[in-house]
Structure formats: structure tokens, C-alpha cells
Length: 162
Length: 333
Image (cartoon, rainbow over all chains, first blue to last red):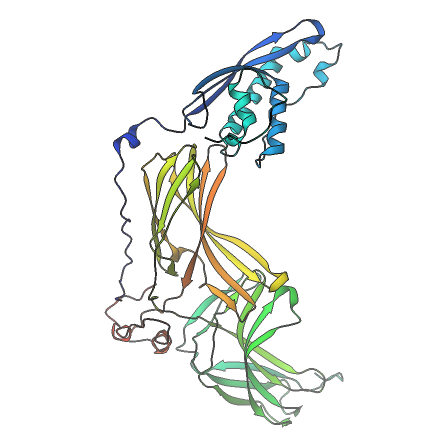
């Protein structure tokens, strides 16, 4: 074998890219919005619900466009299910704000506008981080949370197969 | 050294015969400092002189013998009491007696076997050194002189490329290819990453070189990983069908040849780690071992024959033309 004075650094041969692949819509589109907080109920039994809208073109999600209403405790349920069943490190939720639930506050407590906005943002970041994780996408609880009208807490946990 | 005040003592110096012509190589010590040492190859003769200089001229120095040793030794940092000598040669320079004046002794270790490369790592050290000793009743007077040994190889006969398809079902499929599996220390890794399926949001991709030093055997094996290089090869999101080229020049990094199971005491192996990072900082990676080897430099007419001799004793295909291609080619740095 002859020794080259300069190493051969030419690129390896590769297949030319299809124009459709190059300029087509990306196949990793996933966007989840948490918005439109609404206060539900009366008196001491009030709580806030948020609209969770998902738009995607990932084949693992049955619906490409879905819209559901969820409250904070639903997000907590999802976090617990994933921590138990999936191998992922689940990101933190925005705080529980127990202090805001005590009486004799000077402000609106849990229904203070700025607090709701802060929580909304935290929930949006949380759900977007999880939904993009390939291992979380295998869990039935995530699909139920995002795409079914209501969460059946008696469901049978498991993996999604397609 | 005598306890009683003005006992006679001596200083020892070890000088190599070819100190003027022999090349030196840089080597990092345990505490990270870089120093230059004389460079030797397997089979080369180590010859020189031992100067014993009396501290107080005129006074006699009694001794129980003067000798010089050539030692190749492996030292595990967690077990420093048990240094393992794999090469141990001795030349007696003087029988027990006395020195009445400073004296110089010649020595020669002919065609010494130096089977492994000098290595100073995180948990283990392999070194070669000369040690001259003037035997005394209580504490011997001795001096050590370290040398550095490089092991050379030539182009391997079989050097297949590494090509593999990996991925996460329905999320990410890539095919990666590296042009060789065995690279010399000044080589270039030429490769490509071809994206078959991209359903995650990738932020960037990098190629890391990891050195794994393994010490100990059986139940007490210990691996220490070090990331030697991080080289970003792609910034931004790829799509299906896209091919990202790789061109990584190894000469810029401080690496040693791959050392496998040296004297059954330690190994030093190198891995390429392809890492993809998505927008949520999740890391997807694939590690692949590569073999590194040291290529002998092309010899110029003006320098010594050492490298030529050493680079001709090899495994596999030796290049008979090597000694012929001399001054017209540039010295490969």
C-alpha cells in the first residue's frame, strides 16, 4: 500500500436527497398549547381548567388535532403515571400553591390572574417537554391525557402499539 | 549517607551516548506537567555512562557494589506498593569496594526489548527508566533517568469501514459510516451520517472521542472514561434523506495508540460517540470502538536510522519502499 503524502479527505458517497424530503413539511411537527383558563364551580369548590390543544403530524398520535379541558390535578396524575411506568425523568410541574388555598388572603388566592398565567405557562412547558419524548409517547396515559375527552382513573396502564 | 557529620557521599549522573542525536518526545507526567524525554523504540540498544562524583574530593567512599538497571514497570496508582516489572536488566559496574576519586562507568544494554508504549494515565502508569545505584550500608545512593518508548505499527492489512443503521422505532433512524476502523494518530476520520427518519426536533449533532482506561482484573475492574474531543458536525434540524459529512483530524488531539490488556494489567481503548441533542436537551447516542495506532515518521537522510529500523519490524504488510522514500518527501508531522 503506498503512503499518501496528504490524507484522502474526500466525502463518502451518499444518495442524493429527494426534493420532497428536502423541501416537504417536516415530519416532527408537534405543538401543544395550554390556554383559555376558565374558573369552574362555585364558592369553595371552584377550580381552574385549561384548554389543552395538540397539533401534530407524528403517526403515533391517533388524532392530528385534538382539544381537551384539563385541570392542575390532571397534570399531577399524568406526572405520577409516567414516573411509575416509564423510564423517563419527568420534568417538574409548576408549584401546588397550597398557601394560596388558605383563607384571609389579601388577593384572589388561587384565582389571581398573575398566578393563573404563571401556572399556565409552567403547564405548557411541562406538557411540551413530555410529549416530545419518544419513551413517553409509548405510554397510554399520555395519549389518554391529550386526546380523550376525560381521564379514566381506573384505566389499565400500558404501552401504545401501532 | 553517614550519620556522623562529614561522611562521604556522591552524586550520580546518567548520560546517554547518543544524547546529541537522539530525538526527544513530550510526555505528560502524573501531575499533568509536560516534559521531554529521550525517545526509544523496541529493540534499540540503550548505552551510556554513569558518572559517580564524590561530594568531598580526597575522601574515600565505601560501597557494596555499583550497578545500573534498565527497568520497564507498570504501576497502579491504587496499589503503589506492588510495582510490576516486565523488563528488568542489570549490569554490574563495580564490585564491593571503595572509590578514591570520582569515576565514570560505561554501560550498554544491547537490543533491549520494549514491548509496550510508555503511558501515564488516570489510574495507571507504564514507564521505562535507567537506575544507577551505589550500594551503601544504610541507604543506597541512586539516580533514575526516565525514557519514553513509542510502539510503531504499519498500515493494517484489513481495515474495514464501520457502517451501521441505528435508531428508535418510528422516531429516529440514521445510518452512520466511518471510512475505517483503524486510524493512526495523525489520520482523518472521514464519514457521514444519513438520516432515514426524523420525527424528533434535533438541535445539533456532535462526534465525541472517548478514551476508556481499564485497570484491574476480574471482580475489581475499574473503567475511567475521558472525553478527549467534542466536535460539532451539524447545527440545526436535519430532514429525511439528508447526509451530513464528517471530517475529523486526529492530529489535533492528544491520544495514545490503543493498548489492549497490557501485561494483563490495563487497557486503553478509544471510542467514537455520535451524539444527537434535541430541543429539550435530550441526548441520543451511539458508541463505536476504533483502534488507534502509531505510524513511524518518514525518515530524512540527515537523521539517524532509528525510526527506519523500528518501523520495519511489524505486523502485517510492511512497506519495503519505506526506507527508500527519504528526503524528497516532507517529514510528516
